[in-house]
Image (cartoon, rainbow, N blue to C red):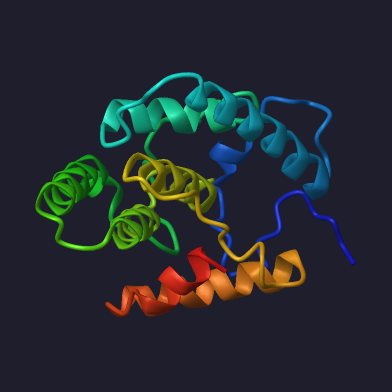
Length: 196
């Protein structure tokens, strides 16, 4: 089993450009597991920061700041929108506009009770992944923001497959499969996965 730092063999991963790869901050990182560990430490710090006081989740500036908090000790581009095409996501020039639309839609859903709270949070998280605003970390970012929105709406944070699935690769595969079904306008499997 290889532990390549930048594994482009997984089509569920968002590949980074050469320029984005050069913006890795810790010089000791040469293996994928070291990168994952550094990012996870950074994400835990961001979670502590975000829980330290009430935040306006449905705010673009906050979302950029959160992404920077989640990945800023690891990547220089953290919190900055991507400028290049990806294997998923909208064209880069559409990111600010599509995020604004998502925030407006979500505010409307909350105000008018368009969907139950869990569904609002999952729909919000799914659309964030579909927009794919950042060079990387979009899935982890969207799940954290989805959790925060669920809590703000009076629900508990989601488990995102950590209860019913045995290992990380199985959980990731189930998450990606549920996202693809949600892309076809069937949110049901992603809702089930979020609470599994």
